[in-house]
Image (cartoon, rainbow, N blue to C red; front, side, top):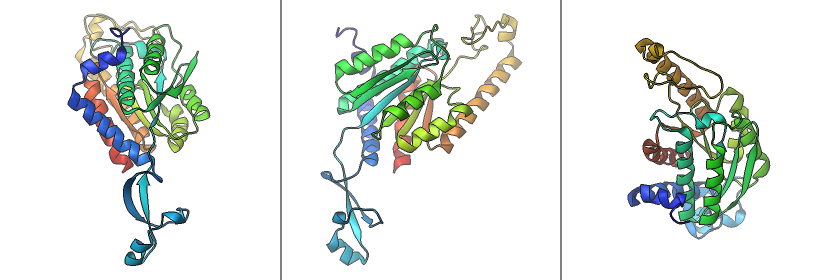
Length: 295
């Protein structure tokens, strides 16, 4: 059991400085979301209508000339929701020649590994057009390993089409406590039809998006790339055509720009991973940007 532990494999792939940096960034984001009557002093702030009168520091208020309150960080584990798009598109080829499913699973493993180390709880919502799976938030190694097995088993080519709205709507109806939602999907999503659900999700939770990149049909000129949603048979001479390859790259860049613009409109940070190797640094960058936005 230990030899097949996904969390143990993640630990073997992450060096200690990387783990500390990622955990520190997650801690900073955690503290920014939850505030209240805890043990750690956070800041002095001007009193605003709706603030608790008992938080007023009368001595500091007398010196300042206006009512000010003392803010503390509330001691609480972070509630996290791992939201995974399990549409068949997630089992297609990645730019490095491997499977997008492997990159998506690795992303989920890193999230669970960091959460377990901090003592946070993680829930799972994974689904597509044909099925939806939800697992309540808990902590501990056994729980994390079980969720990761569920995710890995669902990321297959015989899965149903992607239905990101179904995944986001399930989170909205199931989770009342404000949580950090880590949404794992592909680079083509969220699409315009997902923006309303994303907006609703963002108003109730913190949201980060990890997108897994697609291999272009022209990436590997000497071998065909199958479209998982519809038959696509491009002759070899076209796959290796320079003009066609450039047109494909331009289309991908335009699509990525459209998705990035949508995420910015909704105040959501996202990152695109091309391989397992680039995912770690990309996730560190995502946590850093998310922390900066929350300050």
